[in-house]
Length: 137
Image (cartoon, rainbow, N blue to C red; front, side, top):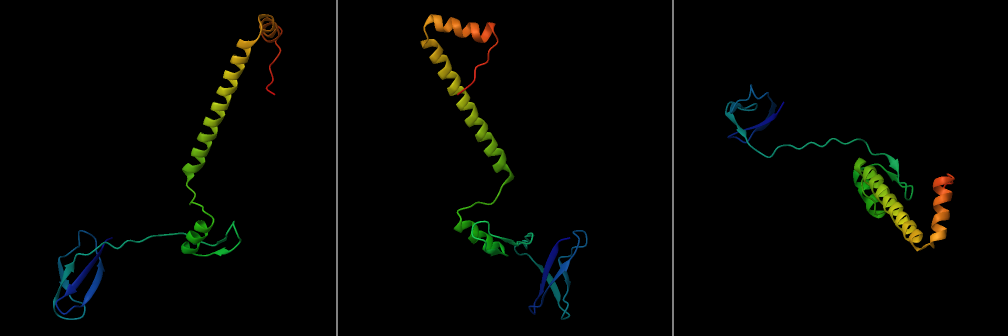
């Protein structure tokens, strides 16, 4: 339910929780016989936060407020955890692994291309026909 603010000509101010349907532009003042009119102002912003209570993983200081948390993070050059960070890290790790495997594959092809014909035939015989496996070293 919204909060409506009212003020009379005498300067008495009060607030009322009213549904939109019950909203009135003017109401009787709570302190005098004058009518109070609705005052339009900035909306009230409410933030809800969970309690902060932990020991800093950096230096063990007790952290009991959001201000202390911000200071601790600044001291340690940290950033707030975002669940997307884990997904990004896994994506970067996979991209790095893919690049590494691609580089290894390219190097293997280049080295095989440099081999003498007899060595290439021996490699094909060992890997394809005899079923031996290649092990990265």
